[in-house]
Image (cartoon, rainbow, N blue to C red; front, side, top):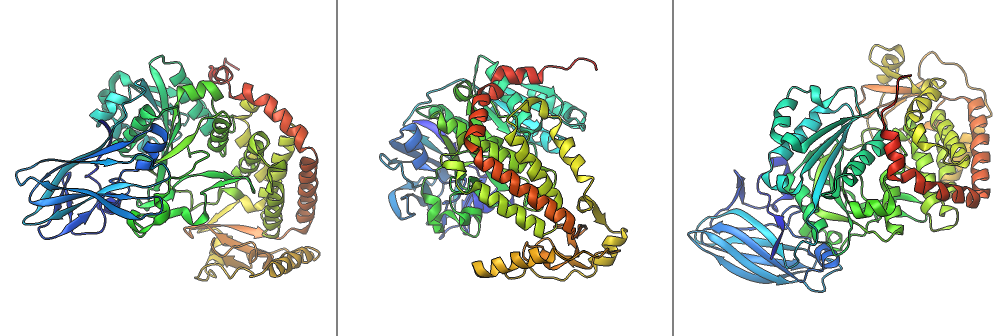
Length: 612
């Protein structure tokens, strides 16, 4: 039998629900103590074993549980099916003087779903669990080095902490021979006070690569290329910088990669760093109807594993289907990279989804593996769809659709984007719509030289914002903020119009309002929190301060009928042009894509530039 998963027994108190169920057991110093006369279940995210994934992708037929324990008690092995129904597979007694409890389970055919976990029943005295592991009957099919690559920009504190966790794991050292840091920022990792110590601990395993800021796609592609250039490497494991890692969770992805029957992209789940038991998504897909990414079902996002544990959440037991995985943590076999290329040079947004779809089209699956995870800073506190990233959201989503959509004109994509623009215009978010129009015009012009654009795209998008007062952030001490912020009323968003007719009336009222001139205002006439500033509420105002999530700043939105009509006409015309020319534009993008993602093209982009 071969190791698949080690038990994690040392976690902070606020992450306890990821290791054990609610119960009397005490986690202390890397052990689990179950008091006499009580029972403790371990149907928890990091402790249970996602058997169906190993059955489907590695061909596993038998799983063995080994529990290192001492005391008088019983260990029960429990199995669930794809619907979450549970059965006890077998039980075994714990030796009072200590030892390893071993129980085998037949999992052949359980590819659709189901987990394994164990429960400890302490009889006459306390039972102390000091370790445990899950083993499978499939030997590793690959044994190459895994290159771990972190892309960072101005987050040296996070990056050094991740390096310290990696350096402290002997087991990870056996699997990861190369640790790369692709530093694209001005606050360099090597300048952090703790860097010399962690660099000494990692020794020649660590390589720091400093390059100009080429976005996430440029940083992650550098790691991919470095792995391809290392003959001993058979995979690259890419990590974002603003994360917190558990070495055993990284090792689970590596073991799965090595056992898989064919090379698969192994994705890690994202847990919210500020709410550490909240799972971002169990799997990620691109919905063909709207060509937008997200979980298979909306209610499967931001799931709290403490409030809705594995035992009580049936949908967690069905094996998830993935089109792609977020690049906060993703393992890519070099065989896949040689087959499909590196990232499309999109800077940020949709690079991970586009890569996953490209791999899918070439026959390489993405598996989001439960229990392989890290904690990542969530993006829910900031709406980047109305800032400079609005350009990237639209350009890159449409580019991915032109390359991979299976429905004509990507289903409802263009209709959805146009509806979004109308909502933004009614909500006085003119800057975002301007960027959307520019993005679609650039898509129509073809891929051009996306590599050269990596350094131009952000300055260009930000430069557009200088013409829009809504991009100015107002804080305490600013008259616009001080006058208006005091008017903020508590509460959530107003009730959404209940019917299509009611929504249409809101839109029509907003349009008619644009026929009236806007009166200049010396300060915002009202104030809304971010939650209250919905597209059906904001159009009722001519001048409003919309506060940020923390309430410490805000942007002043002002109705501008001339801009409204100009941008409405521009977005209508641009969407119509793209709809009519979709086939021809798609053909141009598909013809250009292989060269854009080719390793040698990226190598030229990474080459040092000569003096100007």
